[in-house]
Length: 108
Image 1 (tube, rainbow, N blue to C red):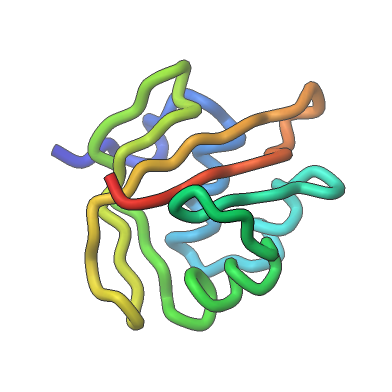
Image 2 (cartoon, rainbow, N blue to C red; image 1 turned 30 degrees about the vertical axis):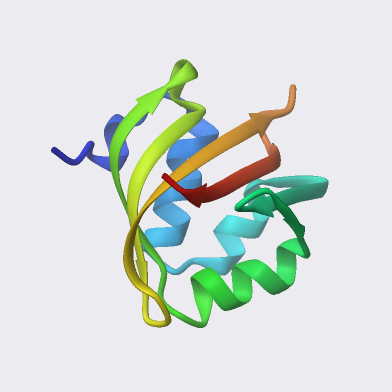
């Protein structure tokens, strides 16, 4: 059963999922700490390039099925126009200012 975005525990992660699902690049970028990093399936990626390709230009969308670690770990059905839908895992590091300094994703 999908967890409604508004019910996700961590405010930064909740805003991340909302920005992805609303295709709001400006809100998404505002959530990231300066120098934020990310990895996909264990490989470091260029954050700006990856998010453009995997989220914004391909209409990414997350349906969260499970959260743990205070809402900083998710299992979600992620879909975009390039790959269709897949079961994914997400983990987030949130800094003291409430901004995401790192996220990691990959197939679950």
